[in-house]
Length: 223
View 1 (cartoon, rainbow, N blue to C red):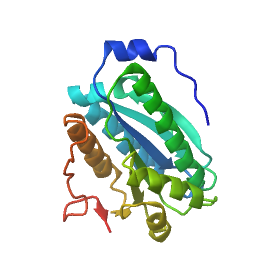
View 2: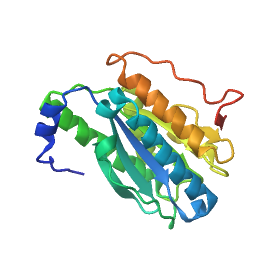
View 3: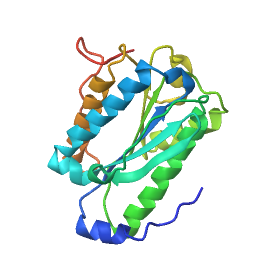
View 4: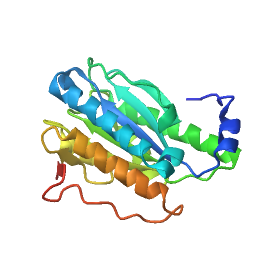
C-alpha cells in the first residue's frame, strides 16, 4: 500500500538529523484482551513512553508507530516520543494478525523511504508483537514476507504471547522463538523494551547489541 510524504518531514529531519531507531508496536486489542489485560497493557505502554522521554538520546532517535488489531488500525504513524499522540486502546473484534503484520511491514518500508530521501541513517527497525490469541485471518503470506525481511536483516521481529496465546503458531511466524509473558507483567516488559531501544539508539549503526535476557529468574518472560 502507498503512503504520502508528510510535508513537514524534510524540515523535521533538518532540525534533528540524528539517526533514527524505528519500532512498531503491534498490539492485540481483540475482545479477549478485555479487563485486566488491556488495563495493564495500557499502563505498561505509558511507562514505556515515560522511560524513553527521560533518555535525551533516545528521545531524539527512537521513533514509535502503534498498530492495534481487532480490527487493524494505525493508531500512530512513526513519531519521536515527544510527538506521539495519545493512544486509547479499546477492545473488540477478532485477531487479524496477518493483516497487522503486513501493515507494519508497509509502514516500515514507507518510513525507510523517507529516511533515504532526507539522507538520515537508521537502525534496523523493530516490530514488537503482543497477543493473547491466534490469528483469525490468513497469516501465512505475511509470515513468509516477514521471515524474508528478517533473514535479510531488514527488520527484527519479536513476538510475546499473553495468557493462552498460541505459541505454536507464533513460532511459525517468527524467526525468533516467541516468549510468553509471566502473568500480566506488561510494565516490566515495556521497561525492558525501552531500555533495549535506548541502548540501540546509543550504538553505532549495524552494531550487534547484547540485550538483557527477559527469561531470567527475575525476568518478565518464559519460553
